[in-house]
Amino acid sequence: MSKNMTVTYYHHSGFSVASGDVLLVFDYWRGKANKFPEALGVTPEILARYNEVYVFITHEHEDHYDGVVYTWDQYAPVTYLIADCLPEKARGHRMKKGDELTLSDRVQVKAYGSTDSGVSFLVTLDGMRFFHAGDLNFWHWREVCNSRQIQEADEDFRGEVKEIQGEEIDVAFFPVDPRMGMLFDAGANYFILTVKPRLLLPMHFWGRSDVIVEFARRNRTRETEIVALTNPGQAIALDIEDDGFMNISLLSAPAVPAANGSSQAVSLEGYEGADPFHETDLPIEL
Image (cartoon, rainbow, N blue to C red; front, top):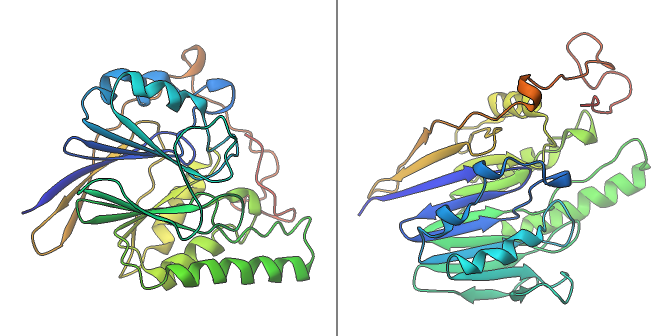
């Protein structure tokens, strides 16, 4: 029997996956000073549509852990799956690398490692497999790291990814962070070439939608499609046929309200020609 699912992007590393009356939410964060448009996020009206809601928090960093998620259980039955590193006040099933849980006959989860704090999650929903990397990435800050530190970061990353190789992943949410400079996409590209998810959705791009759109255009492969969701509330529909073929359709995204009725100005200071990483390897200031 064919399946129909909807994947929605909210902000930074926050996504949801909906299938029937089940909703998965990953690393929901409303942004600094809660500037995320509330109407485009996970609202009480949305939560009330579902009989099962599963909220995943990969680690304790503020851009992945927003306390608002603990208000959601007044609107729907919510189960929280959290990294073991979260503070004691955080409620939920605590998971560390290697832990596995069967949450229902439709939802199973396994925790993998990270190269930063916490864990990454592989979640099976109605037979479809979704991987949220959290902060698993090849973090190489070339402006502050020496060659030995970069090599160690590379080895750590490859070691974590090696444990994921062999898993069949339908959709991966993976960091593509332009702050790292010219090789910002090295981790995502390595993950694409070794794990080969069917679909990769970039995240953790700090508002640099221009860079992410270009990344998607340049780096899709025969095995992996890349879709750049860059606006709050933007969503795709996944229609999975009986033979496993996955159709991807971009749904209409709600318009993002502009501050004071005008569009956001982007500073181009630091650009040299068309290359935002010229000389300094640092991203431009938004």
